[in-house]
Length: 229
Image (cartoon, rainbow, N blue to C red; front, top):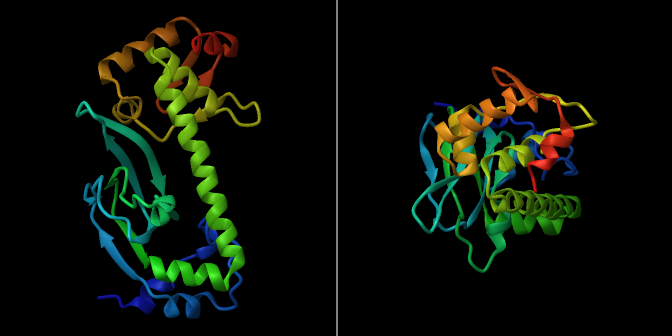
């Protein structure tokens, strides 16, 4: 069995958005001194339940997970897919209502580093850059959730798809690969998979987009924007 020292050798803190500016001379020594635990989870394991108390920072160190929320009417709403290295719901660590807002399920074998709240506070006091990155990351997550709410407020499936696809356009590149299959996209939008598939098929037939497996190309930006109305 690997001990803590063995696990720490494979970790690259600089790749994590809240640790990228940590001012440390020796990462391995820093991690060995850090009060934390690391645990591996198998594929399809529910590692965090919606409503669980968030009393530590959970860092996804390897692998990927999906987050889902059970709505008031009992339906399951997909929120996002998270790939390592990323913290999981860090903003809720210091919330008065410090409960996880989502279920977290592994998409493959993953490793989670759990850092107690008190240790995070110590890092903030001793590393101002860490505190700044922590706050910046949480602010960026607020922007993500704002966009998510905008998407959910759109009533039509085509409108939701248009909003989502337009968000994928970076530097005017209209061809991109999505890391979700149709089932995962349906969960993300909170709609039935057959309805999503039908809407995608209609958008292809209408010449708005083209699809090649997971590669999407926007053919008509104006018509895609018109679907948002």
